[in-house]
Image 1 (tube, one colour):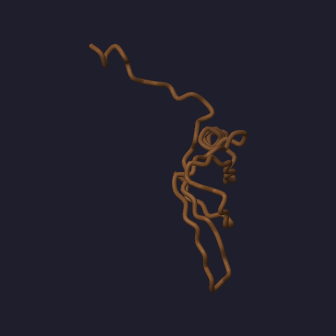
Image 2: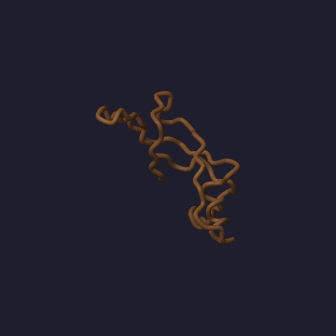
Length: 88
């Protein structure tokens, strides 16, 4: 789960799928592979699970707080369950 704050946007709603580009802080081969697996630069789709619109009248600010989860993974996740064991 990822919590982010963006400029106010009343068009967004829970259930929408959005692109979220997360900057990478290091560029080792291992960290880049892990980063691309979870975030992906080509398909950074995230599902909005919660959102709150915030108004700060004293500072004249409007922003939207989002909670998002990864919508899909770039690669299929292997199923490690042994179906024969489950049904015997």
